[in-house]
Length: 404
Image (cartoon, rainbow, N blue to C red; front, top):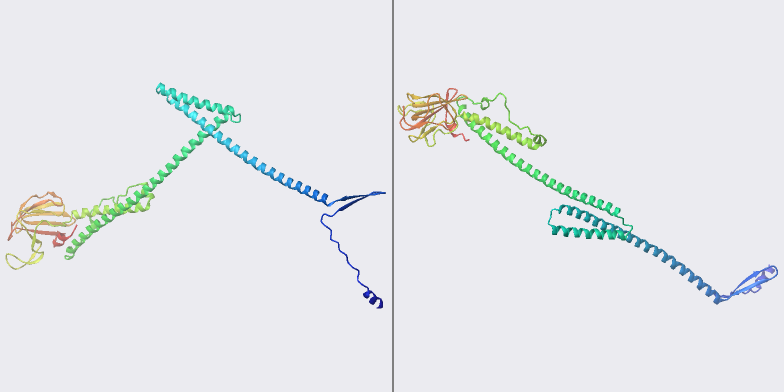
């Protein structure tokens, strides 16, 4: 403890620190067996050595940079040279192609006038001489290479022409397809209108026949328009066409139209043999069908037809095709014509002033069978008009009022 206290009482050893300059004098000692050599390097020498070392480093870096940069510049120049060479070759190729074209032109101008022919030859020779001179000055551009590239250039030119014509044909084909589509749409519109019109025509004929059946219904009769005679082999005519088979929409429209046309043809035949229409153009009804007061006896009587008062001499026309079964003077009827129209229908025209047909004649719808008169049991000029179905008299007025 005493020793520790004594040691603590001793003063601390002072610490000395010396700051040396960066480039202070340095000593290099080389020891041998018996002697030692000392070399001193002063501060100035150190600074000089450091500056030399820094200069060498900077020069090395600059040289490396310039070397790399010069390599890049040389590479770019070589690329430019290659591009120039390719452009030059292309130019020579075009010259050669033009020369070849000029030769072809000269062959075609052999029959031209002498002065013009000489001028073309002179121009061709100048072009050929210029090409030969340029080719000779540059060994790397051989005539064979020019010829080969010229052929390639011509092939590419022909290819471009063919490609252009192909594109033009494609455009024309596209325009034609658009026109075909437009025409198809127009055709569909026309077909649809034709179908609509034909359907209305069929419905109009059916409606007229329904009006006829109203008069027959009062007598317990019915006219079946579908019972008219048909051909043994029938059905709507549909043309056999590949285009229609491939186009279902158009095929459907065409089928519907031909079916309507077949119906129109059929119902036209039915109506042609059915007395629908007015037998005289100008008239007024003086006595209706059925029960009436007899104009002579003034008592109730049965009237089998309808009396249409008109001017004497007015034309009487049959309203259906048929065959004349009677054309004579009949007691009570006066001059009378009876026509059998088939399908159970007959018509009678009485009190006529004159007759234009004879028994056995064949008449068509609209033919004149006689003139209005007042023969027989009559009080004045009029037409007594009867329609019979299966031998039973029916009211002619619905037949006259049916519209076609």
